[in-house]
Length: 424
Image 1 (cartoon, helix red, strand yellow):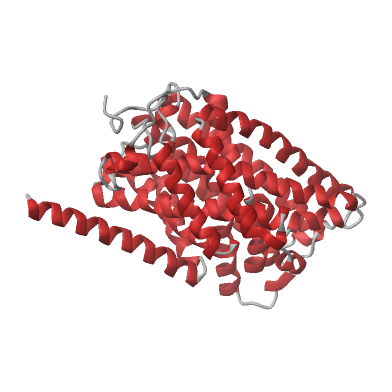
Image 2 (image 1 turned 90 degrees about the vertical axis):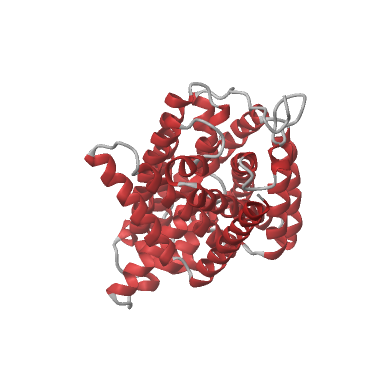
């Protein structure tokens, strides 16, 4: 069989698929995103977290319904092709590719910022090389390494939470929706800040899409994928809620907004302050774990797009000894490496938000073409409107950059097929 037409092997059951989803979400985001959310909304970032969680849940339910019908690599790229047509399918796939490649860069830069701050870009580049080497070994190796990294990451998060609630600096009054850096703003400005924080916090939730993009490698996908998506997101929403309440109860919102390592502030404000270095190491490990699970999702979307000639067909090649999309993996790594050398963490997160929210908006749009109950239809409408709203509330530079890359990719795709039509 031609290498571009071979299929991946179904080896992932419910526990492993759920683990990949959780591992993709509990990455660098839980260590860094609170500062940017606090800068946007102060103490009201809790409202932003609620909004991001609701929209993520609506998106997850829509993804699960579609994945049960189209259990193959590519996620919403495939769903949109089937339900909405080639143009919206391309936009979904391209949005996911650029958004999650930017997420890979953000994860790598976070590892560098925490573990080697004086040479963060160098370490970020090394992280990309190491993670790519692991992923090229196959999805089973990715799952095995993820289990180890997840155990360490969750243990360190538990240390942060316990230290916060056993310290003398705890003040539940900080959870009141007043005060902080947004206290003197109008209600319109407060609302905008809350929704902008939700858009930034969404960056930390979006990993459940990895499960759907790996649909070709999941056993019994019609049943496993929807369950794994919902399980992974539910667990992460619960954990993020606990972390958010702990951080806000321990650190003043203004100090939180000014910090580059907010969870370390929690530990340093407690009697466990000597463990601050452990949090620093934990953030680096979490970034590695998130990066490890991000790369396969992007590469599988590239694989699906290349199979349909929306990207160069050479990227659909699978290795001979055991089907693995090595060329697609290397392409993602090179793209992320370019962003690591040119972007900072803030810009990478912003561009990621644009691409990923466009992707999920189209997910809900595709789900609305299915035969749905009234309740399911309302869920998808909330998800679609929510994604559009969060994109519009992201920083202007992020919207401009992300939109430019999306439009450029679409223009090149249209030009390519126009030339092919003329040749025929």
